[in-house]
Image (cartoon, rainbow, N blue to C red; front, side):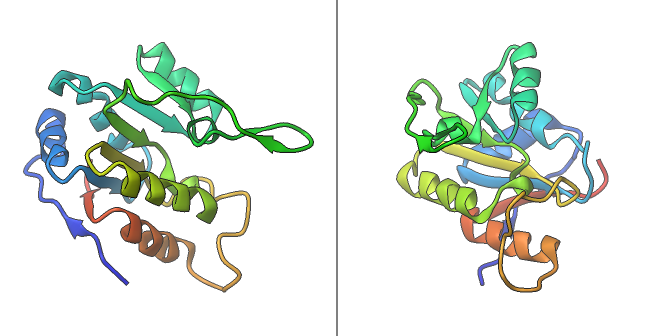
Length: 173
């Protein structure tokens, strides 16, 4: 099992410096021990560095929060071209070409299928800035993540480390 390399940050409160730190490695997981530490807020600073970010959210409520802040957001399933109705899943249309940065928000709430799609997205977009944010205090996926008895936090940390080679961890924010 691969373990993510931790990127060093001097000041957890210096969001612009942290944004600059995540640009070079391109694919970074920003996580924390608790919610409300500013993980997503860091990504909201990407436009100040010239990026056009797209925020990929687990819920429509979070999409609306970003849109109210003047940012572009959509749900995970819309990005990956799936829409659900009561009978089946069908392809939808979404053009992500105008966006040079993707932020997968609340990634700990994703199931294995979605984590696999995120991994494929990274493999197919090596030049795109792709960031994930999350903490294990979020709601767990609504489907089983494994058929084994595991500690959820440790299991998800291991899965996410297979997707993102680099991470930033907020301990005290």
